[in-house]
Image (tube, rainbow, N blue to C red; front, side, top):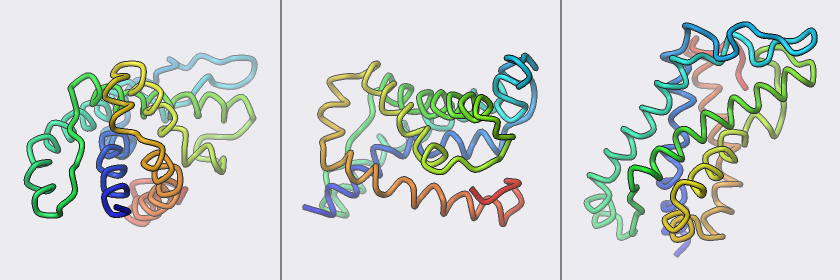
Length: 180
């Protein structure tokens, strides 16, 4: 039972976990905020780009399509029933992860933090909140079936650890300027 809950939760979140990493790899280009400021601070900063956002969203949706293709095989091999993703849910999770990250960037700028500065809690869960909200708004029936309370609890506990771990790896590979 515990294996099923954990595996189902992490599987369901994969289309939300991947977009920010893909955005880092494909980033660059025109900033979403176009260089605009609010008061004396940038709205978002150079780190939030249209190309990164589009690439991240596309990566998440593409991953969901791939997961759909193998869910039955993986489920049979592990004895765990894994969720599949309607396209609208895949899009909601992926674009929601990007929207959550952009919203966090806005909050960081308003609080006076520079690009890349740590904001504990927000840094680890911004994309999760965005993904879950957008997933719910775009595919409410699928969301209710997929994200049970036990699965949401796993997401809330596991995501910060996974986020920190992947950021440390990206930092050591030279893909990020800071390990958070």
